Image (cartoon, rainbow, N blue to C red; front, side, top):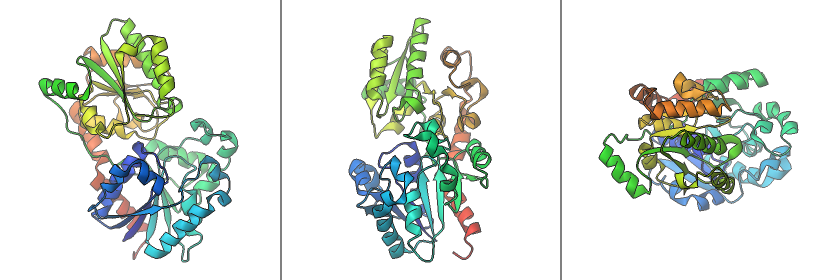
Amino acid sequence: MRLLLVVEEENLGGAELSFLELSRSLGTRAEVDLALSARALQKHGAIYTGFSGSGVTLHVCINSLYPGTLSNLHRFLRRRAAGELAALIRRIAPDAILVNLPTVERGQTILDAVELVSPRIPVWGFLHLVQRPSTIGVKFGHPRDLMVKSLLRRFDRLLTVSETGARELSDRYALCRPAVIRPPTAPLQPVFSASERDRRRTEAGLPQGWVVGMVGRVQLRQKGHDAGLRVLARLLHQGLSLHFTVIGDGPDLAAVRTLADRLGVTSRTSFLGWRTDVGQLIPLLDALLLPSRFEGLPQTALQASTAHVPVVGYAVDGLTELLPGDFQVPPQDELGLARALADLLQGTSHWPAEELALRAANWGNPGWCAERLLSLLSSDLPGR
């Protein structure tokens, strides 16, 4: 079976990194082509050049595969990228196409492209965030909410990263319930030795003592770094000695720094920026904080769990399926979030490390995810 995988997004977040992990695993089991834009390669060349020898053939498109949010409004705005992708499809003749979908509006360029090719190739979408455009906060969100059902119906089949997301999509848009494939995630190695952790923290520029981290794109509307800082301020006021580390970059980084100054917690906060060694940093944390206002199933939650790092977060979407009850609190309940984190750090609550490590490793196993996808494809595409 020959598969064309498409990454529209030029930035790299958890959705893209998990999709690339899936691509690598598929490359050992099928003939895999991966399409991305030249700009994505320019931004993250080290990540993509790592595919050399993986069994995945890279195809770099001159045109942006996602010309912008407004391009969802009319195919005329996507015509150049669609034409370039159509030429690629004719050349490699895949049996099926899988598109990474960070949000519900994405993937329209590749769907335009297949309409230019005969015979038509089945297109599947791997969807991470199922929330409405208005919830995510895009321009003209409420009018665009009305378009989502017709956009999603263009796909031959959808996959989601959580049972919660699959149920929401099916109920909200009267779609066939999507199959679930958790975000493919390579497990991280725990650091059990206290002396080893101290040494590696020093090398990474992290302090000793309790270190709580947030990892990922710095975007207040979704990720809730403002809530994280207010929780930090509350716990410091209660007399707990801890340090807050923000790993990642994004459009709201300056606003988060300003809020840290206003709350008086700058001396207790580190901003490490975009890092390629996140897999080495997460095991050094005492806890991962996820005050996300909406999610799919964060790859960082699976990574932390495999590294025996406790995760505390809001009970949203896939996190409700992963986290034990004591470690998830109702959305927007900052007092409850602070209490859950304090209970963990003070030893009042116990993180079931072995159980969660096994669960996360099984859910995110890239090989299992690849086999699951190929099984679904084989069922829908007999003879290919």
